[in-house]
Image 1 (cartoon, rainbow, N blue to C red):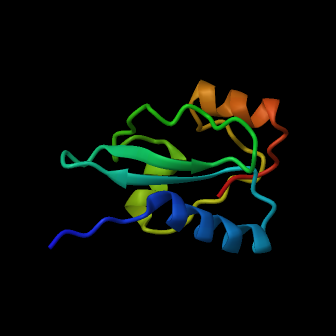
Image 2 (cartoon, one colour; image 1 turned 90 degrees about the vertical axis):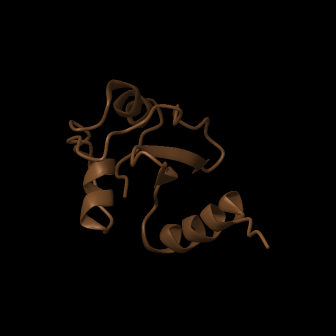
Length: 101
């Protein structure tokens, strides 16, 4: 028997719960691949064009995404996007993101 996880459906449910608490512009689900590198199979940008999630993030990088994975908790960025990649920081600036979690 095999199991298939509905990642877009899971992400929609998580996003709905998070948006009740915070007005987040984007929710992205990052999961480790077989080598432990973080990849993003699903993004919910609330109708905005999503950022390019095709890039891989090493789990030991200083990225807040890797930090959240290592700490096993959400990492909130309240307007300080300095640790995001240029592409992600640019997305936040273009879409008026005040915070990400």
